[in-house]
Length: 364
Image 1 (spheres, rainbow, N blue to C red):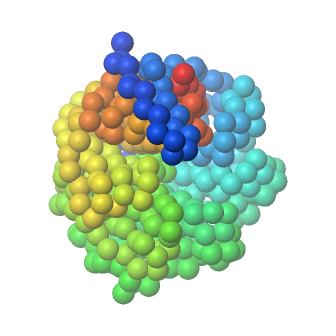
Image 2: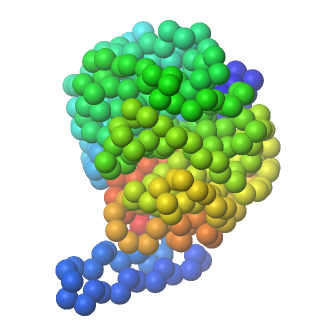
């Protein structure tokens, strides 16, 4: 997507609540799923140690979390956010790390977004003390938006279209080599089509080699999907608004069939509309869900992982919203701007945003 037309003001370079029903116990068929939280989550501001715009979150568990941000910045906690250590990747001070994927306390990937060679992927295996540049985009029209991994070795990264064709790269060896997906395995791109490098969540992987990409900036906001580890792809339309600087910014799946897309019209900071849609057939078809409480586009969203009620947290310049029912109804939790959100469990997650903002989200 042409974030070059929407710089830092937009996406950092594009950049009470009703009680939830407790699930009934099964009749002698094994343990019941954990109950849904009984109240809205609590928010706790944390000290990041940086003033950079923080844009992406990846949690290994409730203690180990990595964050990516602008000015070559990353942050890590190994104690659940009691203390954060922030640093910069050497030689990357001008890069915007708009996606991060954490494998462990020691191993993580950072993806920078930008035109041409500004789109890069780095990896650390020593907790951020050193970083290896694994991939540099050589396509002048390329602009990488997001990445995700199935495991520590196999992953994908997605760029805006190049020369009218979709552009993804994939690795099967922990990033030692990134290879483009052949053009004949991808559907043609619509004019102007690409992703939004908003929160590192426009691409998500799933079990069995599944993955989905939310796209925009074209007449129709579409979802790209694969069932074979990224070797071949198909595409489906969604009801989210299309057009320049509009479409899907974030996509999440809670199982192989049920997913959600979030986004909106990035050029309308006070806009409201059908900015959320859901699927129950693995992304083949999509239908509108409820309208978020926040004003403007949603930049990032995430399901609470694990069994239980399909709860979603969404973030954007308009704040933080919470849905206890798969995006049908939404309640505002905060009005401070946030860019990205990620969860370690059904109990805890983190949202990040401008000026080094980190907000811990705790469910009871």
